[in-house]
Amino acid sequence: MLSQYVEHVRAAQLLSRGAAGVGYLLKDRVGRVEEFLRALERVAAGGVAMDPEVISQLMVRRTFDDPLDVLSSREREVLKLMAEGHGNGAIGGLLFIAETSVNKHIGNIFAKLGLPATDGGHRRVQAVLAYLDSVAAQAG
Image: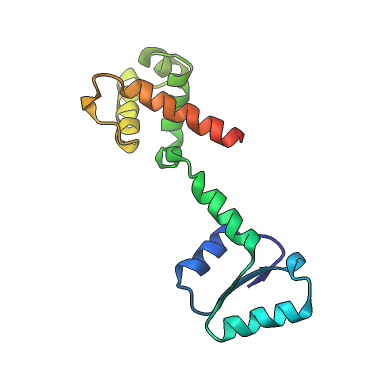
């Protein structure tokens, strides 16, 4: 594949198929015709030709996978309000939902983040810490 920029999904798909005859080069980084032809020959022979920038971006993306990606948008809203220090009743009022619904969302958050009930009540703090870590990672 010859591309103007790194398409993360496409690059990951190419790599997941196996390493035989795979190439992903960026147009602006192919400096010489000879270099490009060698890459084509390598791919045609069943080898691999990957631009270092493609690999670098895929590795950075993998390193910073957000653990909160498993949460629904409503669960993220609830978790954000938890991080702001709101109790369940206040969260329900702010989101115009019943407190029992808030409790259900919080239970789902705990389950999806792998926070077992045996942590002696610290799950709420651990969930908020996960949220704060996520926000900090996104800020860079």
